[in-house]
Image (cartoon, rainbow over all chains, first blue to last red):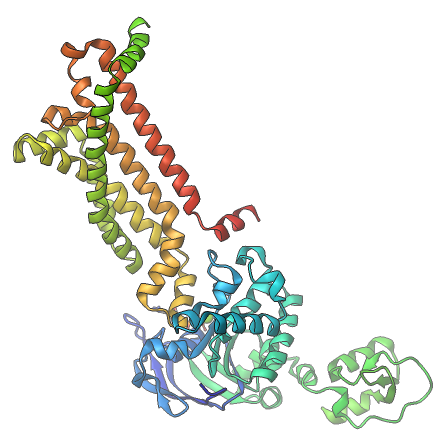
Length: 317
Length: 218
Ligand SMILES: Nc1ncnc2c1ncn2[C@@H]1O[C@H](COP(=O)(O)OP(=O)(O)O)[C@@H](O)[C@H]1O
Ligand SMILES: [Mg+2]
């Protein structure tokens, strides 16, 4: 199995039996290999349907979906699903199995040797930041919501699938844990580079997580498919503009960090509270809150490397 | 009171007889429960997995509840004549509804998210059933077997009416065994039913997955 594959939606359409309108209507988009594509939209607009068309939990009514050039219709459905990681909102961990057994589910049905499965479980638990010794033998009920979701991700990665489908994976977590998990997942994605379809109804999550964002409207109609930057700066229409919010100018500032700016030289010896890793939004907020003209910026080691002003941020924005 | 205590001396005096009849009684009961399991378990579990059949299982269990066992035995006496087979059939008919409904409900009530997760991971329907649904269904499923067993053991007493043997032979034959014999045998039946209840209750506890118990105490 390769590490990533592209996903092509080709006029993918789903009309549920007994329903007059399609839940997903002629959706066409390409997710390049190794990228994260966020399907963003209000509740009921067809995000879950679009996602589950890929692993055929929902069968296409018409159109096609191709993974690495191969139509999903031509593949054995069980094999197809085993080659796709699937993460759902409440993690869906099996309560009667230990964490280790949960993660080992797909390797087991694939007939892996015990030792290979055990090694893989160990590796994955480390990858998601849960020490094997402490967590392998616990049951899902003995974990926090965030930890359960980590296990859900590890379980989806178990057989090293080229593709991950994630349906509002952090939707049930408290805001602090959610943000933490978003960062963790991005870090993990840097390492494993799976092509990821990520469903969300939260614009902040979408611009944070997505290499690309697909904005869907009722009936699974694709309104805009762009980088987060473009979505925020150039919404395709009024609906998108309203959906991303009137504060989209501020949101766009979260996409860039101080390190990406050409900073002014440092002045004075004030202790820097800003770091090069902070976003422009954080910097602007600090400038406004402190009522300062100019604030010093330090690199991650704490050494002051320059200073930032509101003007500098405006130019960059 | 006197007869009540006399029933205990009857138990010690006629221990061999009681043991003999108990073996018959349990054989008949076990056979009835076993046949009911073979008939109703796979059907109930399969319907539960499909999530279809609540109508069927509810109807069957209502019919089962509406028909008193004595009436059933009478019906089968009329249809099949006196004998072991027709008593067995009546007991099976009694045992099927609780087994079927509990088997159905036990599987049907498993969190649909878990089934969805399993299916999405590429488990086959059989793997979903055996690895996810059944382990989580076992406690409720066992409750059905437990109810059926208690029901059958108490009702098997009526087998004697139809010539089926068992402890009912003593209970319905006061002429030969006296009142103390009748009470002794009745107590035995009650004891057997309670013992079966306790046995299956203990089994149910052992079959509840540890992870599920962990969830309850957490
Ligand atoms: N299994 C189903 N059968 C019939 N209609 C469904 C089914 N699943 C979803 N729908 C309908 O399809 C539409 C899109 O649902 P969904 O894909 O779940 O939206 P989202 O994930 O964006 O909230 C909704 O109107 C929903 O009611
Ligand atoms: Mg959804």
